[in-house]
Amino acid sequence: MTSPSQSLESYFYVYSSDRNGDSRPITFPREASKETGTQKRILEIVSSLAFICVSQAEGEVYATAIRTERSLSEDSAVIYLAGNHGVPDSTAKYLQSVLAQLAAISRSQPTGRDQSPELNGAILRDDGQKLGMTILRHTFPKFLNSLTKRDYAWNTRVEAIRGQLADSPDRLKLFGLIEKGLLVIYESAARYRANTDDTSLKRLYEGLSVFETFIRRGMSSDKLSILLEDLDRTTAYYPWSANSDLVDDDLELDVNDNNALQTGFSMTRFIYRIIAVNIHIRRLLRLAVSSTFQSLFVKDPSIYCCPPAEISVHVDPAALTHALNLDGLMSLDDSAATVTGPLHAELCIFTALLRGVLCEGSAPYWVIGVSKLMCVGCHILIAKAFPRVLQKYSSGLKPFAVQGTHGKMYRPWVAPNLTFATTHLRFDLDHEIRECSKDLLVTALKEYVEQRRLSDSSIGSGTSDKKDSEALGDDSYERTMDILDQDNKQHPPNDDA
Ligand SMILES: [Zn+2]
Image 1 (cartoon, rainbow, N blue to C red):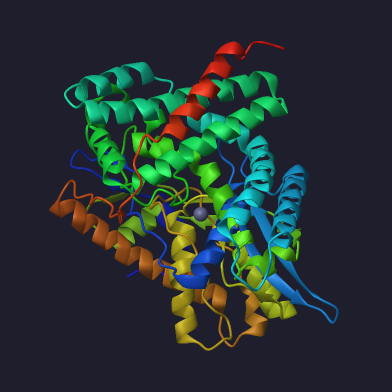
Image 2 (image 1 turned 90 degrees about the vertical axis):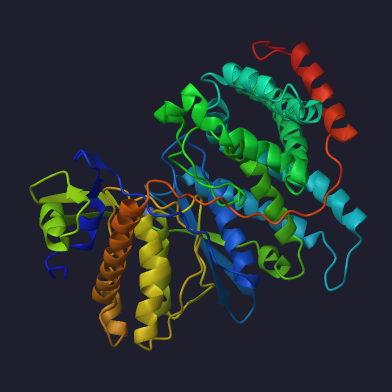
């Protein structure tokens, strides 16, 4: 079906055409990671490490992986770190300091037996706060960007929600608690932005932590999750959902498992974006003291920054859509062209790990973490094509556990150059992986046009396992928010004191 001259990259220039012949980008269904057990936990570690490296408001993506080294004297671990556009020295140094703090926290925990949760909690609270502040300081620009995405028409939206909930005092009260938390966080963030001192940062971290706990407990009960689902169901009726700036273009990790993909402003997704940093901090702390992973963190791993790569490829989308011959697909440009793109961070890691295994005999964990969900290209290549190729040929290589995909195709996306592998394997990995990725894309595109023909909308809602939970609106939440609120009022952001 496809001509061999068609590059894999050409597929990323194919658009969907609607009845009027207008183009729109193709979006495949979102897919979650299928990992379980230990792989899932290691994936959490590397994903969280990647997430906490992101500082810039937009356009920054990191990927990480872990390799262990065994020397005569001791075991050690190496964290691989890659960015879409390289890794700034300051980011590598920051991650090293985070790893050193996690190592210290790991060492402070007793090993080999169950620990008292109270003792554990006390140590974690103090060290966790220090770690949390380090991470929040680094990630603040990104955090602030997520937080201020609400600004457009926020008050209108809140008023509308209050009206919507007017008949239901319980739900109105619950929404009031969310609103209060968000307001306190917003004002604390404004204050830290103006002063950038540790006191303001500590306040902000405290407010965020309390809010995150409140949301986490609330989402495991029906009350809060149903309220948010209801609010998000009515999103489409609000004018600001038409504003493309608010349509999620940069989906975070699957920390919000309950959240079905939808366009427009989602209150649930907004909240999860804001508390994402705390979720990752808590995860790292939990795993650093877990009996299974303590030994990994104690090693105080060193960091290896993978070099970034710009790759030029030939694309010919018109010839490809012609060859595919599928109604409902089109190309925007008629002429073939050479395009250059950065190799996505996870593909930099993928290449570096394979090079390490094949050329140096190193032993990685077969896991790659990314600071957000993966794009279609990276996901198909790493999570689907690579394992298929490994089934076909024996090689000693293993599939990598990875996150899910947000289902979007990016242009220009480029595939990694794996030709170095040929001298170490009995097959041409580079060629096989490209061909297999193309086959998978053809299948996916066929399903896509078929689905579009059958129905316009059939976005399923996410499933969530809801556990019975503690009561909502507990006193400590309201008390803490009141204290922080008072404090913010006494020290407005532009107060230099
Ligand atoms: Zn990608």
